[in-house]
Length: 349
Ligand code: SF4
Image 1 (cartoon, rainbow, N blue to C red):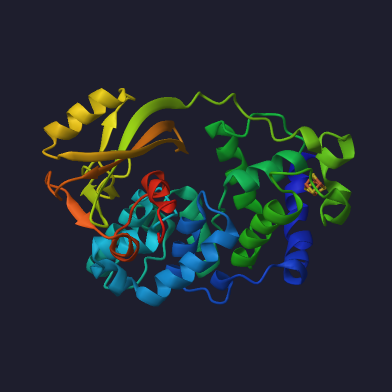
Image 2: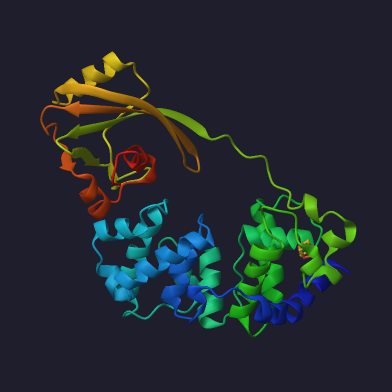
């Protein structure tokens, strides 16, 4: 069977399979574009099980695009806390404002307008247009590329943009009338049967009869990927200042990694304790006691932080920081996991 025939078989096989096997997920109960959009943004980089709670809390706090457009940043960060990649929630708000101001609160329906919204790339635009509006717009992500490379026994590296474009073109030609179900069926096959973290479960796959990877015995070795570039490493010293049950926090800069979020004060590198205490003094703080030093790590997409955490009791809550109790930090601030982990071992966070 040639490549085009493989694509042509997909709708007739996948739609009935999806009907029978689809997982019940909170964002599959309706076709509201806001819900599809929010779930797809949350699902980038995050597991389905983890997203369920975030999705429910977010929609409870901000049930409409109009409320999202007006939401305070601190509330947005709080709702997003722990999901990481905070740019995503900033872009959600920016896009919501555009929907309100340029489209009168009605989510745009054509692909180009959806794609033009902040934070929405070709994959998310395809998901919204096909699932919410039944348009023949494929949503091609790593899951879909993996499935297609196995189905067609294609050893081209799936991270090449030209390969993605080719898959997108081929899918667009065979999109059925039930576009939303077809998009979700492909995603579902990639998430549950032809998955990323284990061998493909070909025994239960509806595509086994015409899958070239299965037929040729190559499915386990696909997809092919380009070698990964190495992650940059950064040393950091995180200062956990305490004073009478309160801890020092500050806001991060408005640009760059974790922009605008809260952080524990920190220094570049891993200077020795004497130098750390010298810097503490320059911050306007008087050290009472050094309680302990721990080592932690946090991995972002392109950078890894290797951190030493220095717990210091100070005489006065000074230094231009904001001083909060652990309960206040938990309730009112969005502290990224990279920093929050230093507070977790302290009683009630
Ligand atoms: S037969 Fe196997 S390799 Fe082919 S699509 Fe199905 S699960 Fe993936």
